[in-house]
Image 1 (cartoon, protein in one colour):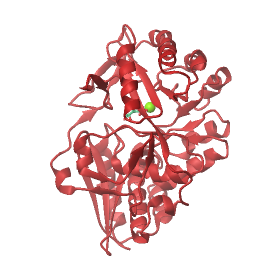
Image 2 (cartoon, rainbow, N blue to C red; image 1 turned 60 degrees about the horizontal axis):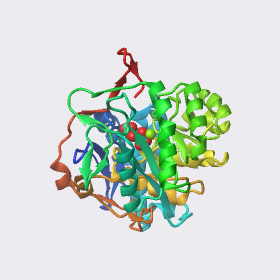
Image 3 (cartoon, protein in one colour; image 1 turned 90 degrees about the horizontal axis):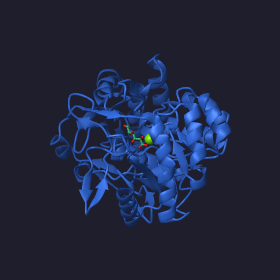
Image 4 (cartoon, helix red, strand yellow; image 1 turned 180 degrees about the horizontal axis):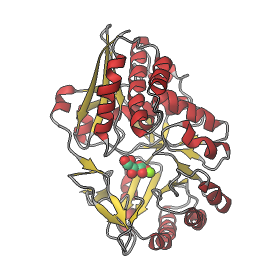
Length: 410
Ligand code: GCO
Ligand code: MG
């Protein structure tokens, strides 16, 4: 199984996606997701200029060796661009090995540890009536867990309540950010207003939907440790499944303070790339869920290592799954999630119809649970003609400013 061709395919059906396709001398092809939202072309260049030439002629069966070779031979280790590029190669090799073996990837990872993966969706609204409609709509679509984000009085636009929302049957659907255009969109932020408002939202949601529904919330890296501690504490009565990205966790130590003050479970890691980003917070049990995506954490090979490490400390998976993870990256997450013992929950936002036409997928969605399906490999096919209809379009994530003009974490 020698790699004969390696193509980097960029397509923008509903948003930008970067896909690596490897083709071997026995005619098999494997796909890997390399999408880094808002910085897509950096990974394209990394792959095309520096990785593709090294792949040609290699034995596609040697997944571990290829991972170590790409990680160590670059000398410049880690970082989102490098790890997304390695992830794409790793996914494509697992896809190929599955196809060669005639088995879905989860079988190669040890087989299924459960029948399906509990998934959560993004309910949101500018105010409570809109939020309640969105939660109801998610429950009708089969979701059994929801993330809750709302507008904050006094703030014009806020994370999770996108300005590019669409409406179906009167219900608002927020799309994941990254707006097409030559400049990032500016949002406003006020931490004190947010901290005053959020507990009242969860009180109202629990009042309306009862105690059982798992509720999640994303603070999107905006708080200082003491503010995060305050938020976690004030949300304790509402029994959150998790509070996500309470602080910008580059400073792993900061979470000690949060942990000392609250029993609200903590999830972190969607912008982490390697096990080293998690070293202290796993060892000291400062988090409850690992948020990494297969796409941004060196692929199945490396994320599995992070999750196996986490398992020794009773920490579970909560893999990142917004729409900027392509259907290929999602499939990799589903195979990994099905196989590991310490699966927690999977984020799942549905892709748009154009994306679904470019990427034909084999996963199933039933009673709030996902299953990757049983096609050999990852179970995703890329329709190149369809992909060719949607050339790359420049897009940026938004950013934040405080009332006095200071740039703040987005
Ligand atoms: C999530 C994330 C996303 C990110 C997005 C950035 O929890 O799903 O926070 O909403 O903002 O993936 O590219
Ligand atoms: Mg998040």
